[in-house]
Image 1 (cartoon, rainbow, N blue to C red):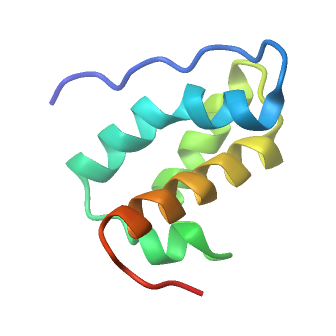
Image 2: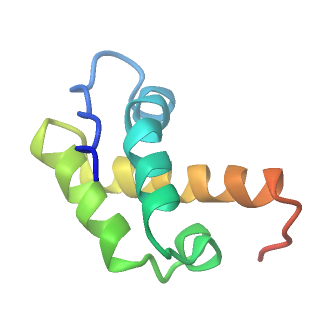
Length: 86
């Protein structure tokens, strides 16, 4: 399995940048594991994605900004796949 991409540290706009900073690692996790995107888009974030948020926190992102970005990425992916979510 190839190593996950690194997450760059925050620069200016936390929410927009968090999404773009986390997207490559998020995509890797989704492709390489069986993660429930429905759960990730809601309040019950899978442990692998919580770990991703903590990785982002370790390079300077606020944990809640990272979790919000992951939820948004999950919603985007679900929308792209034509899934409905609440």
